Image (cartoon, rainbow, N blue to C red; front, side):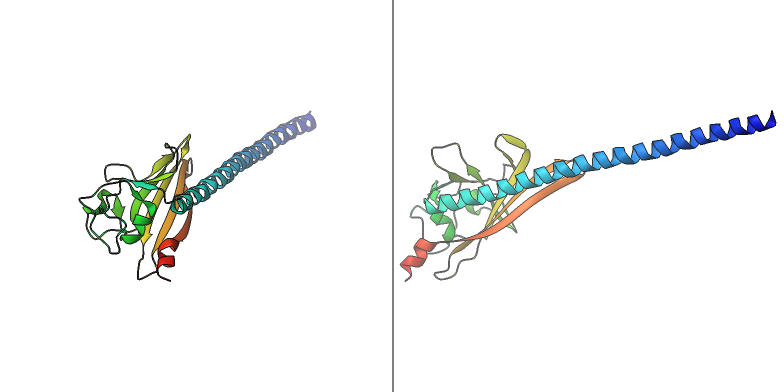
Amino acid sequence: MIRKSAQGGQSLIEVVVAILIAGVVLGAMAIAVVTGLKSSDYAKNQAQATKYVQQTIDQIRTIRDNVGNVSNFLCSSNCPSASTLDCTSATSPCSFQSLFYYQFPPSGPSDYNLNCDSNGCYFKVDTSGPTLALDGITALTPVSVPIPNDPTFSQTIFLTTANSGCNHQIDVTVRVSWVDQSGTHTAENQTVLSDYQQQLNCL
């Protein structure tokens, strides 16, 4: 009888241990599955954000090549000008080439009527019209703009100029961000656009 009780107790311990081991294994598998799904979602969003960044850079380059309009950017009435001017009393829209003749960020907070900081001045791409245009963001508008038809992502575009002589350039930085359970993530790229039309005039 004693031998049978020992065997019964031993079997009960084995069952408990087996259940514990199974629980640990299943828990590890569940964690692995959740982690895999998160990694998959992150990779998918990262790829999509990178695509949006490159698409926007291409759109801005197209606006430059087509001498497209720039809205909410107040330039001189005779823009583009050969010198850097304060933009406080003029009309818009101007052409993209006008941007090459001004300093971003501006010298004063009232210049350009744009949202600017130490990184430059903020813009967004306007796709509502028949042609692409660049739209300057005013101080009353959020710097980060949702991607049209895909509110999961928001976009920031800022321009910085470094102009001297016949070397007029615009540094374009595009950042696309999204938020998930682990925080905020971004994809970013930069490019430098030159005013090739002005460079030809300098030859």
